[in-house]
Structures are given as structure tokens and as C-alpha cells.
Image (cartoon, rainbow, N blue to C red; front, side):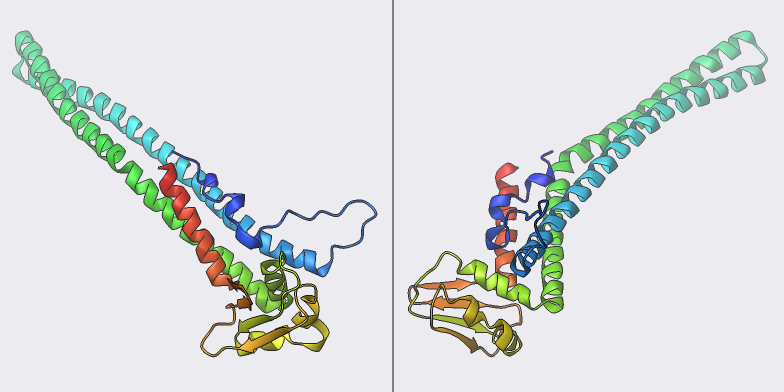
Length: 260
């Protein structure tokens, strides 16, 4: 079974994934921008940990199941012979004849063999059935885990957006980081998000001065607070949290299918 830890690859993290920032001796606290980028990275690290933990749990469960089946098989075999021998001896003793006892034991052992073989056949069929469907079961389980991991990442990021609105600034900055000297930039967001992006003390326009001198935040009715579409003269970028995570989710599913 392929390891679920392979499902999330660093190359699939999209614009959210940054190299971890560590403080070295003599260096002060990480900047606000670095801290916000680390928050985004944390979401995907936690999702990856969830998948790895679930993979370890499922592997342990499969091993335990196989061990229990083997123990039950051996117990069934042992019990079958013991039951057959006991019944044969009892029948022989009741007959009161040595030959009857031998015959009873023989017949009892024969019945034990037949009953034991039936039990073995049933267990073998059960094992074959489990093995046959195991791939499909695990594939579905892994798919569910992928969805769960992305849901967790969404929850973490949205929680951080509520706790620190500046995280949204980091998302916008990451999305346009490679662009310079644009004639104009328009950022389409909800009314609530627009208020956060245009605060005088942390205006997104100031933060994007290296990208363009003409940055405008446009309130767009009908979109969620996590949505964010950035338009430039020759480029449109969907930097919304849900959109970015949905792309990652799709990439993770593609990875699963290619490795099956």
C-alpha cells in the first residue's frame, strides 16, 4: 500500500507554501509578514500530519485484523478436533465396547475433520473477499482522508483570518509577488474584506507599491469574505482561500490516481 504521506507533495502547496522561517542566534523575532506566511504553512503541515496519523492508524488496524483472523482460524481448528474427539469418546463409552469406543472416536474425528474443514473454508473465503476488496476500500479511505485534510486546512486558515486579518494581506502579496511595474491592480473582495485591506495603517495599496502605483480595492457583492480576485492589465489571479485549497485538493486526488 502506498504511503499516504506521499499524497501531499511540497510542489502542490501552491502559493501558500513557503520555506520554514527559523530564528538564528542574535536575530530578533520574525517579522509580521514572515509570521503570517508561517501561519499559512502551518495549515498544510497540520493537514499532512492528519493524513500520516490516519495512515498509521489504518495500517495498525489491518495488521490487528489479520492477526485476529489467524488466531480464530487456529482456534477453530483446535476446537474442532477437541469437540470431535470428545463426542467420539463419549459415544464409545456409552456403547460399553472397546470396538465401539474406537469406532466412535474414529467417527467423531471424521466429523471433526469435516466441521473443521467447513470452518476453514468459510474463513478462507472471508480472507479472499477482504483481500479482493481491500484496494477499493483503502482507495476510498485515502480519498476521504484527503478531503478531511483539506477541510482542516481551510478551517485553520479561516480561523487565522478571523484572528489576524493581516493574513489576507500575506495571501495577496504572495499572489502578486513576482509582478512589477503594473499599470494598475484591482482587487475584488467582499465588503468586510475591503475594510480590512484599506485600513489606513495597513493599506494594501502601500504594501503593493512595488507592483503598481495604482492599486484599487473593489467591493464585489455576492462573494465570500475568503474570496479574492486580483486583476492586472494582462493577468487575472484567483487568490481566494477556497479556490487555492480546491486546486490543492484536486492535485492531491490526481496524485492518488496516478500512484494506484
